[in-house]
Structure formats: structure tokens, C-alpha cells
Length: 225
Length: 225
DNA sequence: GCCACCTTGTGATCATTTTCTCTAAGTCTG
DNA sequence: CAGACTTAGAGAAAATGATCACAAGGTGGC
Image (cartoon, rainbow over all chains, first blue to last red):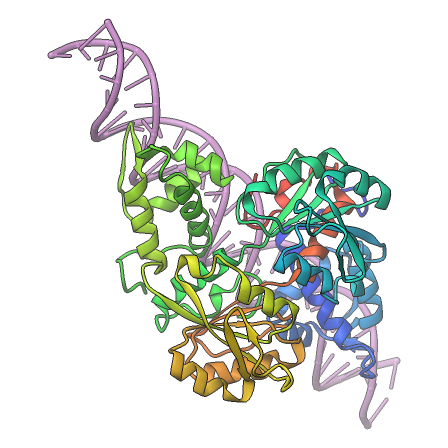
């Protein structure tokens, strides 16, 4: 049951919208005003029919014979993805990865502002990373309320990840990006996405064994042909 | 056209095998000898029927009424994923993220050994990160040959990623894990997997807008129900 | 204003993946 | 050793996603 717009957008489409968005962004300021599904498909590394189907879920604002107005399309995708608003984020677990994420330019650029850092290690508390002071993980609830955190990034060891997730959920966080290796159980209404480096490498390892047999780019979960 | 074993394993199954593998690993040393598809499903956050179907692609080595022998299953999955061998990896682009990846314990633990680092920034060349000396990216071809690199991790800015990929492919690398935001075009027979943090956040943002409307864990690409 | 040309949007088809259901095979208890 | 119980495996059905093919709509040249 969709709310915002009247249509229900397939999960597979949602996961491609950010791709299109990025490609379109790269094409602003080039003088181009419109872009065809063919061209967009090529740049995003997908099939043109797929592009048209995907975009048709947002409404039909292409012009036959011409293509899509880049600015307008950007605006529509941004609206659909909620990129027109600000999503304050907290990063929990400031190890190598957490620190790298905190410093990562590109979060803020697109509306995702890292507003707080937390860690369980008391020797880290008080240190500054990316201009933010690391706070104790015990304060997580307070932090989330204070900063109106909507998205949390978990970069702790796996052993702590479920506890952290529970606390976050308790504090009202509805979206979690999980870099720890295990699975998180969360109540309905909370979205979790997982990024697991070991998993990715293992999948590559599989295709490495098989390569030269027709298993090529199809190893790609999100991208190229 | 499968080679190794006679069966063709669906892509979706391949991407779940690492999950099962991790869960099984966590259950060694607990005294348990076997595990049921139900239990495995619960721990991996998937459906039990799916677990059975997935494992049936590897062969049928469960025992009805009992479950799967944990050790044997681990061995079979490892064999299928190629985790029984060593995959020397190179990381290209030693910024915050690249350095974090270099330091990340968990690659090596499972057979993925980072054997070289490369960066285009000459002021970084010669520095040591995670006990490895950063080498100039211009030496990439030499590095790959010298270290017999099979898997490359690209953590450069997007602008350089395609060039780096081309060089890697030229040097015979058949698997690439890409952290840069754009799409890579590579010839058939080369596998690319993409990890894009901005994309993940944007997908979460979408479900954040919709949450409470029945869009819950289904935002999850890999995991929970 | 008409005609050749482009490109979108969509219905139809095909492929993949998930889920359901049931049977066959084994264990464990008494 | 018999019967109740547990669980894998597989076939079928349902859901989801990808691709195809083409008609409808719009542009620009003349």
C-alpha cells in the first residue's frame, strides 16, 4: 500500500533509481537538456527497456521523440527517493572503517549528514574524527533524540551489532546500514541494508572459479551487463 | 555451461552461500554436529525452503530427519565458493576507505590476502599501510604479475576507476570489487561487483519515506525477512 | 500542414526466484 | 521392532523481474 504517490514501485526499480540519479547529475552542466532512455541506459549500464519501465513507475514525464528532461527527471527521482530532505545520520563503531565512513565526502553531498559518532571504547571517546567528537555508545539513545537521527550506520564488530541495533530501534531509528557481518533482527517497519565485504569477495571468488565459462558481468549485483 | 560440478547454480543462490557459510562457521565448536534447514534459515534470516533449495544445488548431502552435517556442509560450500584456495588481492586507491580496507581483518581470515597497495598520489607512494608499502599506480601491471593478483579492489575516485579497471583487465585480473560510484565497463569473462555507499543510503531514504506502510525489512537486499 | 523519423510507454512474453506442499527417508522412544 | 516424529528433497505454483515488440505521440524538415 503506497502512500506518497499512488503507485507501488518494485524493489528492483528502487535499487536502480540511485544509479540513474547519479548518471543524470553527471550530465547537468554539459549543455544537454534532455536524455533518451537509450543513452541513460548506456551510461547506467542497463537495458533501455528497463530504464523506461523503471521511470514509468514514477509517472510518464518523458516526451516521445525527444527523451526525458534531465532537470525534471532529477527532480522527480530526488523526490521519490527523499533526497530533497536532510537525513541526519549517526555512525556507531569508529574503527578503521567507521572513521573512513565518517570522513567520506559524498554522504553529505547528497543530503546524508553525519551528525554524531559513537563507540564503546572509552579510550576513543572524546577524540575527534571528521570534526565530530566521539561519544560513548551508552549515550546512543540520547544522541539519537538530540540529533533527530533517522539513519544509523553500524560499523561495530559483529558481536555488538545486534545490541546496537536494538538500542537504535528503541530510540526510534527506522533505517540501518549494517557493515557488520551478521544478520540483524529488527521489527517490522525498520529497514536494514547490509554491506558485507567478505560476502562480496566470496561471491567474486565463485565467479573466479567459473570464469571463462560465460559467467561474466552477471556476477554483478547492481551494475554492468 | 557449468564446469566444475555438473550443476548450474543460480546467481541468487550464489549470493546467499557466503551467508550460510558464516552462520555455519559460527556454529562450529559449539558441540553441535548437525543443523536443520529450519535453524540455518533462522540464523541466516531467510526462508527454510530457500535454504533447502539452495543447498540442493550443491548436491543432496542432508540427512532426512536429522539435518546437515555442519563440517561437511562447510567443506562443500567452501569448495563451491573457492574458499579452499588463496586469492591474492590488490587494493587500488589508498584514501580513507582504501586504508580502512587494507587494515580490515576478515579479508585474510577467509583466504583473501591483500598483497599489494597502489595509489596515484606520489606523496603516498612509499608510505606503509597495514605493513604494505604503497606502490605507484603506474606499476599496476607489474604488481599484478609479480603477485599473481586475481582479485582487485578499486577504491579510487570515480574519475579514475575506469582507467584503473582497464589496466587491471589488461593485466589479467578477472574479478573486481568496485567502491567507486560509477559503472565499470569490462569485457566478458570479468566479474565486477559494486559497493556504493551513497546508493545504499538513498535506498534507505526511499524506505524511510515509506516506512510504517508495510515496507520493512524487504528493503534489505541480502538479509532478513 | 503533411510526412519521415524518433523515442516513449506499455501490453505480452519469457526467465528467474520464491514459496508452498507433499512424499520419502531417516531417527528416536518405548 | 513398531509407530510417532522430524526433516530433506523435489515438483508445482505463485510472484517477481527482465526483455521484447509495437503502437501512440511528438518533433522537425520541407
